Image 1 (tube, rainbow, N blue to C red):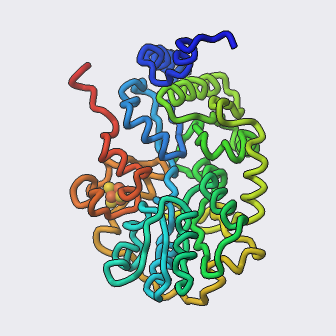
Image 2: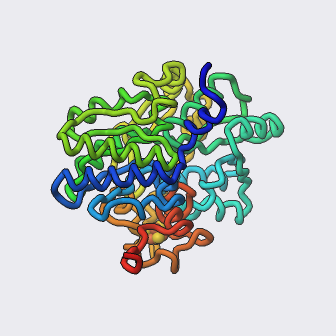
Image 3: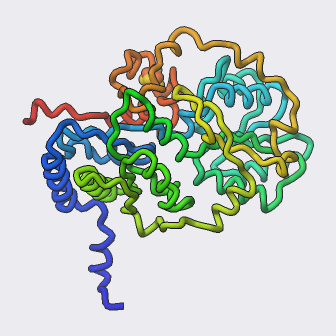
Length: 381
Ligand code: SF4
């Protein structure tokens, strides 16, 4: 090894301001050389929006570059009937374990937090293993793990199931699969997306190769991006280069984590336990193959198969009042932004969310409320 420690630290500076400025200048050059405005690209990951908002990267973007948020928050796209299922199970006396973000997500009638207030037993866990431990500690109770997250998280659900769980443990899967959602967004008539940033953590599982059919079909480039400020900026520069050159291809700008073929071992686990099925993503659309459900071989740990509860009576209950004014779906489809919502920062706040986008730390409205959104630079020039 010839690098000094100083050189190695230098290589790890993914937040270097000078490099960020150089990349911002490259972005401005690329947009200018494309020669039309605006140029609209989309990221499909709440962690990308977090990086953009937290580090104020929009202040570096050229005005003619629109970086639009897509459906990148798994909690936000968890549909009301899925929440209703968890609520119904809690109200039926089963013990629900789930991630903290899921507690306040509104169902059609109530959230899990409401169900807890009415006597339901709901435990917030940091990981599925903790939910399994709960089942071991309470053998007299049925413990249902309400599982959410994209394919990255679904792999951990699969791995824990494959390692064996107690008899009184089951999974209510609300896991989502991102590639089919990109298909839907690309086909929406109101979106004029010229390229996509793909989430690096999900691609670590599936590999960059998973986007090749999409690129071929829709003739738009996809760049796999990491989550440090320089990762995002460098990936955007690459994406604009591809747009400028009219090259519809997949580029991997996160090679320190993502390979072309992905993690085969993890993919095997994922598809051993789950199958993709069609279903709604909240506020967006019915997405073919967009939901991950347990395969029939795993019926014994599938809460939907284990408990024969008719949830349909809850599903007919239309949201009312403020919820009808929530535009979360349009935001996740990339056609509007949080500041377009009349409830944003007024009736809808993180402590009293009206829509799912204000609940999760990966939700666009929550992120913009925490860090601010598009900076208004008129005052500074
Ligand atoms: Fe929905 Fe609240 Fe966002 Fe408005 S601010 S779109 S009500 S989540």
